[in-house]
Image 1 (spheres, one colour):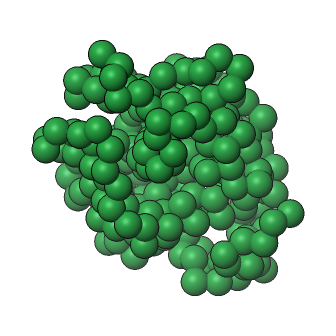
Image 2 (cartoon, rainbow, N blue to C red; image 1 turned 30 degrees about the vertical axis):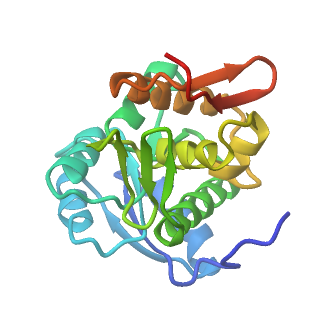
Length: 236
């Protein structure tokens, strides 16, 4: 496996918002020895209060929570506090609709129960690495689209373009290559590192990005059959 930009969980503070005691114990038993700084909230309301403090590098949130469900927690975090802290949602449903709902409500990634702790840590590493790299990358501009990875803001023809973090990362990668093709494998490596999910989660993220661009009047994201995706300036 390729070397990560941080070899352990040191300096990564993670809030686990989960009511299942057994699952919480498993997460702590696996991540704490790796150096992660863990905190826990047993219900959605407490999770919201702690998450809003801005003290965490990543949130791990179950969809089904007492007090306040995980989707509401994530939505309030994005809309009320304006927080961009990465969120990995835990869900019991494997449906595409459930995954899209999690992403639309502000999650950056999701895990379907039951999941292996090895996969959990790989997802945490990938999401945190992506969030850190976005804060240090330079401004991107292409065909009326502008992205500032440092402030994690985007604009289309001078108007704000609101994107979730994974969609932002995908668009940044496509803009760097435009108008050339970026393969599916390259995009998966960009968002998942060396541990892509078994499911075709990339399709969901591409769908959300394409919809956001079309709603902004920029239907520039095109599929190159059996290869990958590209941005076409003349698309219309």
